Image 1 (cartoon, one colour):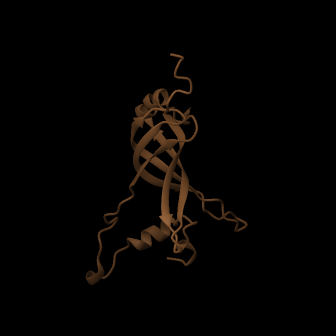
Image 2: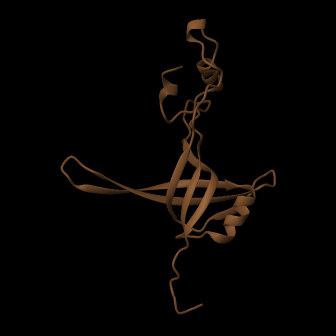
Image 3: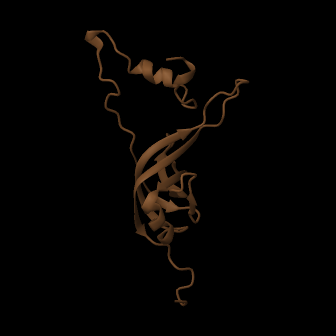
Length: 153
C-alpha cells in the first residue's frame, strides 16, 4: 500500500484493495475479501426537511441531514458539548414512505453503513474533496417534532 493511500482523505485504489487481499504464502494465507464490518448507528434529529429525489435509473431516494450530540470532559474538568452533522441517504420504498412522515425536527434512529466519494487526484495532481455519507438500511422514527402552535389542529 502506498503511503498516500494511508491518509483518510484518499480512497484506496482498486490495485491497493487487490494487493491487500492477494494470495500470500501458506503460513500467511487469508481469505480473499475476508470478513469486515461497515456499520453505523445514529440517534438524533433531522436538521432540515428531507429532499425526495429520483436517481438517473428512476429509483427514488431521500436525502437528509441528521444532527447528533455528544459530550466529553476535558483534562481541566470542563464538559464540552459537540454536535455533528451527518448526510443520510435512504433508497427505494423506504425513501418514499419516509418522505411523507419525517421532517425537520423529527427524532430518528438510523442504521446503515459509511460511504465515501471523492478523494481522487485529477490529472494535475489536485485532490478532490472527500465526502462521507450514511447509506441507511433502517430508519426508525422515534418522535415527531412538536407543533409550533398547539391551538391549531
